[in-house]
Image (cartoon, rainbow, N blue to C red; front, side, top):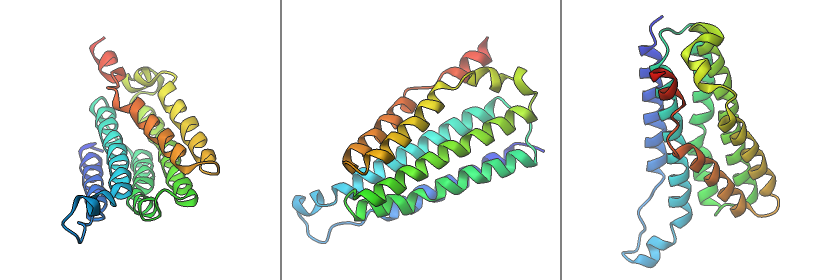
Length: 192
């Protein structure tokens, strides 16, 4: 099977996810900076979710740039990842509407965690379909410390919602920051 359809479908779903999230940004009714300032939870949650969707889109693109083919396992693993990412608009709206209350913030973290977990079957399905442990993708990921650190970060963030949800959000931001730094693993292996 050709990988182009999976890439195009994923791009479309991600575009819809971002569109739904941005539609939650409602203009204030009053023409003042005070009215705009009241929307800070909505804006901060949107920025965080936008960054996460961008990170997944970017890394998805990098993974697919070094593989040749896909199979049924890859397609289902990709849908599994997209399912969890499609819940981001809902959880983003929920935490912003409730000003980062404990339960919505924990559920937001759970969605981030489940998306990170769903990334793993996609990665392994792509590796299996494209030559196994000797393929470029397997070499690029290696032990995948960033992926494992992310899962730990989400678990810590979810646990922190019981203490202080805003600290949990800082943990979610910190995990995003480690992924915002360009991930050169695939480029290094491709040029080697």
